[in-house]
Image (cartoon, rainbow, N blue to C red):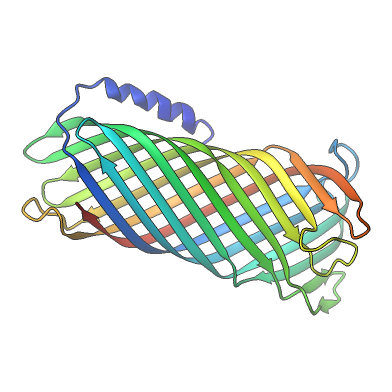
Length: 311
C-alpha cells in the first residue's frame, strides 16, 4: 500500500465521467465484529540511533483479540456532497506481549526477555469525512455504481495492559505484580476513495481505500520500575502514516421497501508506521532522558456483521 495515496488521487480522474442524477439519502449502520491487532516499537541507545546497540529495547504485542462494536452514519445530497462519520469501541479479550533488551546491534546479544499477557483493556476509533459523489456508471435496468472522493480526519487509540509476567531470559520464570500500561494515539487527516455498486436485486458491494497522515503519541506506566515516575514513566512522539482497505457486502434491500433494515458484512485491514521519533523517560528523582524512538508499527484486521437502515 506504499503508493496508495497516489493511486487514490489518480482514481479521481473517474470524476470526469458524466454525472448521473443522485437522490438524497442517509444511512445508519451498527455492527459487531472480531478484530485482531499487532503493535510493536523499539528504541535506540541514544538520539542518533548509530551507537551500539542500535536497538536497545523492543516491545511487541501480538494476537490482540478484540470484540468490537461500531456505529456509522452517512448522508449524500443530490448535488453530490457527501458526509460520513463512524466510531467504534473494542474490548481486548486477550493477547501476548514480549519485552526484549539487547547489548548488540540488530537484536543481537539479547540479555533480557519477558513473555507476558495482555487483557482487560480497550481500543477506540473515530473518523469523520466530507466528499463528493457521482454516479460513475449507471444502468437503470440492473445496477448503479457510485464513486466518492473523501477528505477526512481520524483518531485511533489503544490502551494496552501488560500482566502475567514471565521472565524467559534469564529463565527465572513467573514474577508477581506486573500491571504496566501503554496508551497510544494516532490522529490526523486522510484522503480516501469509496466505490459502491448497487444491484436491482437488493445486493450491493463496496470498496473503501484510505491513506492517513498521523501524529503519533503514547504514554506508559511501568509499574514495577521504582526508578521511574508514575503514572507517566515515559512518552513517545513521532510522525506517522497509515493505509486502510475495507471490502463489504449489503444484502436484502428491495426497491419496494428501501427503508428497511438490511444485513452487512465487512472485512477491514489497516497498517500504520512511524518515522523515527522521540522517547522521553521520566525518572523518580525528577530528571529526564531522551533517546531515539526507532519506529512504531501497528496492524489491524477485522471482520464484522451488521445492520444498515436507509432514511
